[in-house]
Length: 76
Image (tube, rainbow, N blue to C red):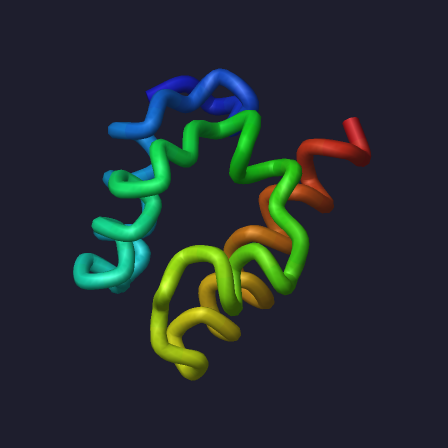
């Protein structure tokens, strides 16, 4: 998988969340065809409501993963 999330395929995104401990929720990214570019553009509401993931895991995914990926990507 590419180091820069912007180059990730849908499969890379699914793999990332599976490895991060969210195998159940990773399927939602697959269903919605979220690739790296889409992932970096996601807002909090997209993760909490757009993916049909339960609130607890959705919050963790957004706070500890999506936000961090965005921060490190947009700082470069």
